[in-house]
Length: 464
Image (cartoon, rainbow, N blue to C red):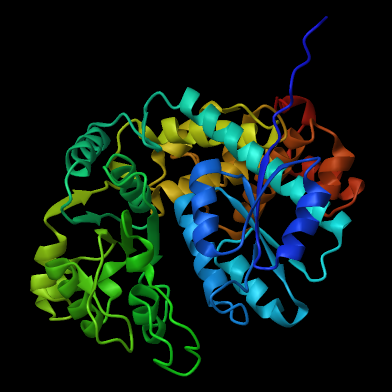
C-alpha cells in the first residue's frame, strides 16, 4: 500500500484563565491547528520556549488579578521579547477596547472583541499564519542570498568588517557596550547581533527607546513599580530590566535619560540591583546592558547634562556604526538586497535597477542612512512599471543630470514640461492618452505641448 504523508499542523497557543473558554476554542480549532493552552503568563512563556507557536491568542485579564490588564500586557511584552515574529492576537471585551488598541501599539498583531465570533476568529487566524509563514520564508531567503551578511547586517566595506569583528569579540563578554552612530545606521541591529552571539542568546532581547517615552513614565517602564506607588498603579508591575533578566536590555537614545534616571542606571551597572518605583527593597537582576545614541555624549559631559561616571561605565567598549556614505561599495549591495526582499514578500516586482538609478544610488549622500535607503528602494519597487527601477521612481537625481542654469521663467517652465512629458511617455510606452491622463491634461493639449517643445514621441524609447 502507498504510504500517506502526515500533514504537520501549525502550532497555536491559547492563553486564557477561563478553562471553559480555553476548551471551547481548542475544540473549535483543533482540526486546523496544533492547539496548546496556558492559563497564566508563566505557563505561556514555558509553552513558547518549548513549542515555539507562530500565533498566540492572548486574554489580557490573567492571574493573579484577572480584573486588571497589567499581567496581560506583561505577557505580551515577554512573548514578543522572546520571539519577536510571533503574531499575538488579543482577545478583548468591549469595555477594554482602549487596552486592545494599546496592545496593538505595543506589538500585538490584531484584536478580537468578546464574545468571540468563531468564523471571524478563523479568518484572522488564517491571515496571521499566512503572514507568519511569509516572514519565515523571507528569513530563509535572506539567509541564502545574504552571503555578505553577518547576523542580519550586510556589508563588505572595510568599515563594516571592522564592526563585525568587534561584535564577535565583545559578544562573548559580559561588559556593557555603547553603540554610536547616526540615525538610521542600524544601531539596534548591531545590538541584536551582540545578543545573538552571546551566551545570553536563549534569553530575551528587550529594546526601549529612552527618547520616545515621557520622562514621567520612563522610570516605571524601566524599573517597574509596586502596587499603589502612584495613581493607577493597581498591581505590581515588572519593568524592562526585570523583563530582560537572563538576556540583554537595549537602551536606545541613552543621552535622553534625565539626571535621576542616570543615577538609578549607574547603581544598576555598579551593583546589578534595581528598586521598583514605590519600592524599598533592592532586587538583584541578571541583565546585560547595551546602550546606543546618535548624539555626541562628550559634549553632553562638557555641558553637565550626562554623568561622567555613567559614561565610563557604559562605554567599556565603544562600537561605532559608520554612516552609509562612508561604506564604500555597500550601497548597491544593500539596495539590491532590499529589492530582492520586496520581490520575495510580494512574489512579484522589479528585479534590478537601471544603470542611471544605480549611479544615482551611489551618488546620493544618504542623510537617513540605511533606513532611508530601504524606504527609497521600497518606494521605487512599488512605482516601477517594468523589470527595472528608474531614477524617477526612486525620486533621486543622478549627479550631472540636473537642469542647466536658465535665464528666463519661460525657459525654466519649458524644461520642466519637457522632463514631465518625456517621463510620462516612457512610463506608458508612448501611449498619448495614458500619458495625458497622468498629467491631468487633454490629448489635444498634450500634442500642442509636444509641438511647442519640438518633441516627437517616436524618438523616445519606452522603458522595459
